[in-house]
Each structure stands twice: as structure tokens, then as C-alpha cells.
Image (tube, rainbow, N blue to C red; front, side):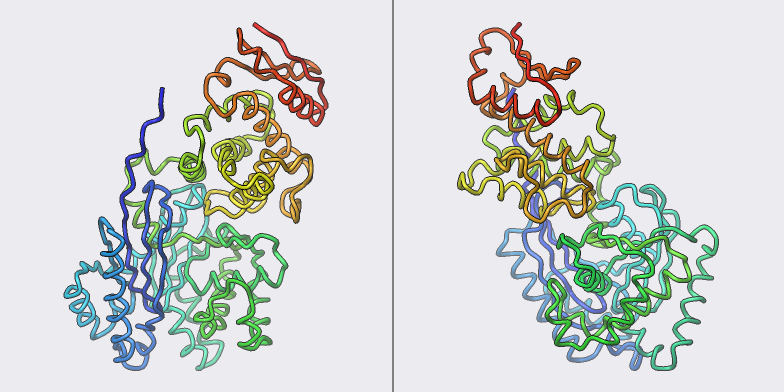
Length: 492
């Protein structure tokens, strides 16, 4: 049976009117894990003058309106089907916030002003969307406010919002370090989490904290330039404070991936983070690339759709778009599953994700197919996957597309030796399945590969036995050898 054509090619735009920046993101694809078609921000600084005047400054207002006009026109040019827009603390708190809302309505937006606890809930749902089993404290540091949420295995338990965004921290710090400490203690006491929040992971949401993570990646020579699910020891927060005291702006500008527009607020963001994880006694810090915008999309899903695995859904969608024979990714995963039944349970989904992407490099130059597969697996915009798992995914695709038994260049730094070798075996099994079938369906349905004692048995039905040519035999032997087995072909 042929695969059904995908329904969803609708484009959804979200315009996020934050206290520090205003951002347009245009999404397309499965609502559970849509692809980003466009992403742009304007650093309007709407909350910059709130502490001193209680209002959005004239220049910030003008910059915001210009940005909103540009974004609306872009949405029209991109044939966006729907535009969702929301505003957060600055618009919520400013005496002239209604003026900006009026200007937005005149442009064509229907802006929802999020209340603090609603913003905290959406940030938490964004984290859950990208890290489904997340348990801990979500902290979303915006320009005008800090949102905190307690989550447990994909459920939001409690939400709070405090008027202490990164643009307001500087004023407190100017009054002395103890002022900020006292305010943080007061906030955390209000949550009532003194005991239940102790020792939990702390999930970082917001551009300022993501920029701090970029600095930590650079400092620790982290080999994978992917921010989502990046983990840091809690003690690194205080180290970041110390580093920023020593580094000047020119050095910061040279750090890969660090937004220069965030540099002025990094010190304040680092102080806030260090105090929070200290008082919460956080076990570790985990960065989420998903936040309020993704939480808004996630909240609109039905229960069944929300429960889908974001990694498997995204890799299936990407693999189908680039495949020669789109129906076969799940079948390839099923075909090789039996010989890897002793894998740890959390590896099964990584192996299937690799199979979902098992055709993505066929249209590349033959000399660079392995590199193309590696690039997609390692650097793809996936969520629900850790750094070591990314290495396994990239390694499996590198091997499948011709990388041989070699660890990919620069690999093996996050995944341990056993995991890396297992990913190589996955890749060789995928390569065998793709070769015997030519990427088509029937040969995979009418053949079977399994371990029988010390043999790697490939069983072929009927006249499909003719598919067992020299190249297939060679790949069968190669896989058997690396698994410490002997190849055996049998007919039915």
C-alpha cells in the first residue's frame, strides 16, 4: 500500500512581543514538531525604561511598530495561513502598553496579552514539548519578568511569575549584591517549593540564558554546537559570573553562536542564574531551545498528538521528504530490530530515528553521502535527543552511507565506545537492508535477518533469492564480522 500524502503543509506564524525582543517565527509541517521556515528578531527593548518611568520608551515603541509592520508584510509574502501573536511582561506592565496594542491591531494583529502564570505554563509546556520526560524547575528569564514552573514527567504542577526580568536585575544589583539575593530568596519562598524543588534539574528558557550556555560551550570545548538539551553542572553558573567579570565585549563577540545583542545583559542573567540554582540546590542545568512559542503550539494539540515522540515524528517527516521510497523507513527499522533486541530500551528510538533518515543522502554526490548523512543526523533540528544520542544517530547514518567501520571525524567524544560501536553496527545493518532491497518494500517484507547461535542468518523467500548477489553477500559478511558472528544465507 502506498503511503498517504501528508496533509499538513500549513504555515503558522507566531509573533512574540517580549520585553527585550520582538520575534517572528514561521512554522510549517507537523504541529507537534513543525519545521522553522523563518526566524527573525528585533531588539526593541520594550522593558528597558519600565523600572525608571513605568512606560515603554518612545524609541522602543517606534522600533517595535516598525518591526511589527515588517513581520506582518513578510507573513503576507510567505502565504502564512494563520498568525498568532502575544505580548508578555513589558506590555502587560507598562502604563502605555495599550498604545502598542492599538498600533498592533491597526497593522492586523490580534495580540493576546499573557498573564504571568499563563506565560510560565506555556514556557513549561515548551520544555515538555522538546524534552518530553522533563522533571524539575523551568525558569524562563525574559526582559521584564521571570517565570518559574514545577514540572514532573511531562506534567505542569505549579506556576509563578515575578517582575524580575533581566532588564530589571541591573537596578537591583546597583543597590548592592545583597538586594538581588534578598529578592531571589523572597521569590522562592513565595513558591512554597523549599523542599520539593531541592536537588531537581533546572531548565533554562530565554535568550539571555541560552547565550550563557553558548559561552559555557565555548569555555568547555563542547564538540557539538547544538544548544537544545545541553547540560551543565550547577556549579558552572557561578563560573559564568566569574568569566564575564574578566571578558570584554570584543572577546564575547568572537564566541560562535553568541548573539551580540544579548551581551549587555549577560552579567545580570548570570547573576540571576547563579543565585537561583544555588538556593534551589539544582542537580544540573539543562537548556531548552523551546519556550513559550512552542508551548503555545503544544497546548493546542489533542492528547494523542501531544503524546507522540517528537524525535521519531520529526525524523520520519524529514526522511519522507527526501526519500527515494518514502514508505520504507519504518519497515527498515523493523527489519533490523531483531538482531538488536538486546539494546537498552532508550536506544530503540535512536535506531528507529536513524532508519527514518535512512534515505536522506542518496541524492548527494556519491563521494559525500557519508558526510551528508552525518550532517543531517548530528546537526538536524531534532528535539527529544541528548548529545550522546545525537552522536549515535550521526554515526549510524555516516556508516550506512559508506563511512565503513570508522568513527566519524571528531566523533566518539560524547557517546561512549560501546554506544559508538553499536551505532556502527546499526549503520551496517541499514546498509545491508537498503542494498538487498534497493530501497523498495517487498524484499524487506519477504526477507528476514536474525541471530541464530553464532550465525547471522539472512532468510530469503522464493525467487527473491536472486537478490543475494556478491555485493549483498559482502555486506552480510561485513555486518556479521563486526557483530562477532558468521554469515549464513538460507532460502525458503
